[in-house]
Length: 440
Ligand code: ADP
Image (cartoon, rainbow, N blue to C red; front, side, top):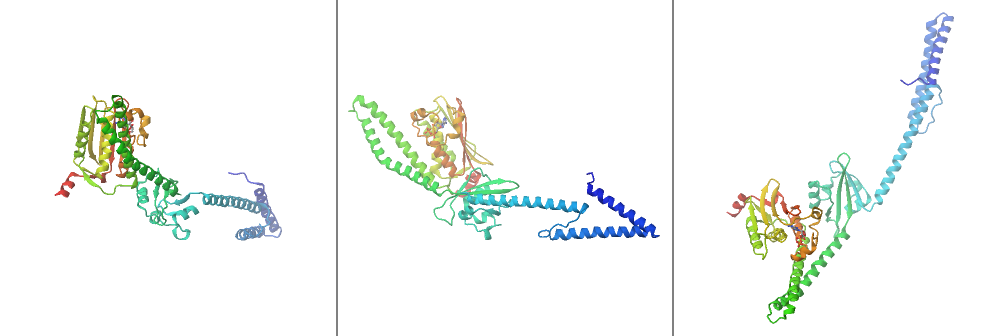
């Protein structure tokens, strides 16, 4: 319990004094209890008057001065005044902070939208209003997916993987690309960051077109050069000293043709985002074809096995899937010595369809694995060139898989071999019975 303040001792003394005076005056006048009752009544009246003044002041405190009362009442009024001042100070600070926050978010070059747990718009800044065409009066409280109906954004929200932004092309603005990223925070709240990436996308398109056009233009002269070099190589009258250099020139020209072929394929893959439908592919037939290709190489691993654990078919674009699988099998053949082995395996489980290529080759150091699918990335550039590699094979694989909603997994142990697995989602797998029914 808090010790009583001086004002309380004074109030207690005053009450005691009132009781004594009332009782004594009453006793002198012949009615001590009557005197006491009168004194207490006066004291109560005085207290009620003070209470009334306090209550009146509380109701009109925005403009009225606090009542000038002493004792406990004065103490209570002083406390209320102090509390009121403190509250006003905090309120002003809060308003100031809110204003600063609003000004700084308004000045942000990016759009910011605050969404609640139901993904309804709670607040947005000026830039978000401009980029997403939002109106403060009409759009507050609406669900964001009802305003942004682009399928990419819908898929992004459904996947709930917000680690990377999604790029959409709003129907309202022509030639405009927006990057959207959701950042969850607090209790189910979400912050959506919006930025205009039209310039980057245009530059990317220019780069893609340049690579595609340059590759296309280089293809014809290179075909002529390769043709002449081939003829020269077969010419028995060719000077002995020139035979070696011409053969090397032919080899390099073929490598360049391979690079240009792969660059053109990559440009074609980048043109569209995703393969919509596709036809059911017989993975068993495809792998046996790939096995034959490996065995037809002048130097190849001795043992090339195929393991088909499911007769389900893979739904996809045939040339693209062929190209991706053949790149993986080609690599396994290139980087595995003749005494080694390769295994191709196809299986289906509740997570979808899986195609794996395992080799007992040289393996890949772990620090290189995350970068393997980058263009022209090679673990050992000299070795890759010697085997005729363009450094684009795994980039093609990654693009093809992305377009089929699939993922590439790489497992490797240096010196003992590698496994490259393509994981396809369940919707890309057609059970054998369905295939049979479709063909009957
Ligand atoms: P490349 O045409 O050089 O083979 P890729 O994009 O197909 O280009 O592969 C990139 C790099 O990954 C290769 O240069 C090679 O170092 C490494 N690599 C790919 N597959 C294998 C494998 N099966 N075994 C060992 N290294 C591999």
